[in-house]
Image (cartoon, rainbow, N blue to C red; front, side, top):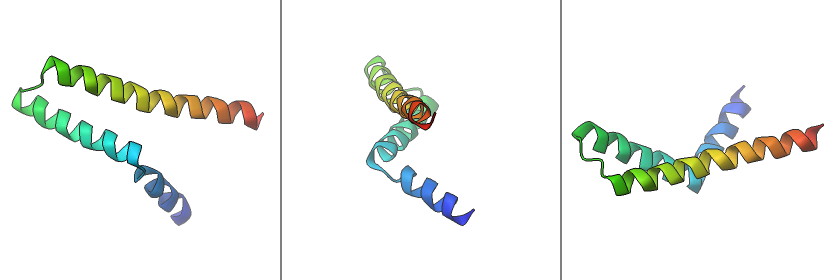
Length: 67
C-alpha cells in the first residue's frame, strides 16, 4: 500500500502534472474572481485536453501490449 502511494506521488510530481495543477489553480482563482478571459480559457482547454489525451493514449497502449 505504501509503495503504491509513493509511486502515485512520484508520478504527480512530474513536470506535466505540476504545470496542469498550477494552471488549474490559476483557473480556479480567476473563475472565483470572475476574471477568466477567452484567451486564458482557450489555452487552459488545450493544455487540459493534451494532458488527459496523453494519459488516455498511454492507457490504450498499455492495454494493447498487456493482452
